[in-house]
Length: 119
Image 1: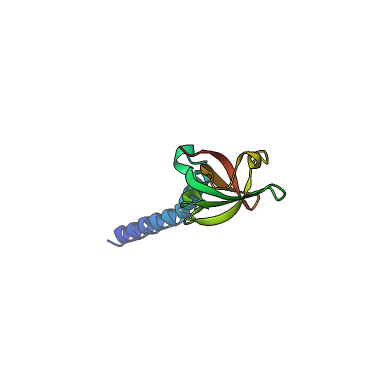
Image 2 (image 1 turned 60 degrees about the vertical axis):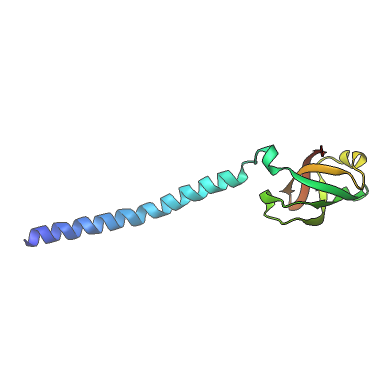
């Protein structure tokens, strides 16, 4: 009887130890997976948001947009200033123009990374 209890205790301790040792590995793999998903770009159609050009500041390389929610950046709808990925775009954007765009955080700055005229 004592042998059965000892074996049961050893088996229980082994299962508990194995579970404890595998948790950091599991957490690390889930974290890595989550990180990989967060770093992967969203499909362009789902990330595009409607916006209206309010101001173009060519000297600063920025554009002010009123926009809908930016789900990829977890931001509500608002009016704000963005940098643009390509300064040539500032020659094409005009106040009052309706666009669909994708924004992302690049080097710490919110940046329009692509846009198209709204249909």
